[in-house]
Length: 155
Image 1: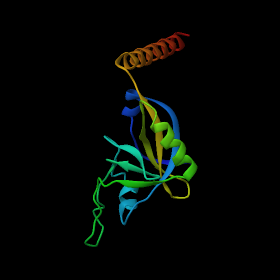
Image 2 (image 1 turned 135 degrees about the vertical axis):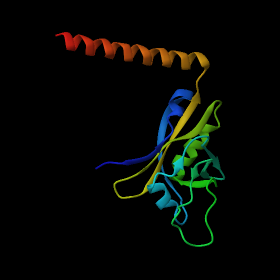
Image 3 (image 1 turned 30 degrees about the horizontal axis):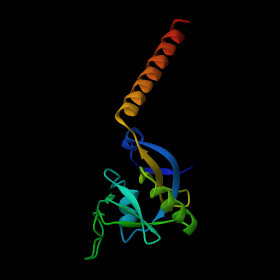
Image 4 (image 1 turned 90 degrees about the vertical axis):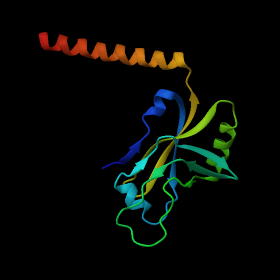
């Protein structure tokens, strides 16, 4: 069965080098889980920070669930606490304090047991020439795959 992806941040791999990734739980309120299951989440412009021994994700937009009842609907872009072990938080805090590192959510998914999880990447920013190299490498791989398929057809 495996994990069910809800949303991915595809732009991250183009803009950053992902050195390590961590799995964290997300503290959600009310009908946010139902909205997440419906796929009403956006990871664009989203990042995470360590503050007072806790990890918080900022800018993750979870649209309000349209069938929710009640007067108090949570703010769609409120900061949400991530659930990690103290030792993981301490190592993340140490690594983020280094020059050039940041925490960026890579994807949101549900586990087999139905828990909402977020995959955090410890990232370093790419320079413009790194991005051009990655694009050129991807194009070369695409051309090689195309040539291989053409060769297979002629055989």
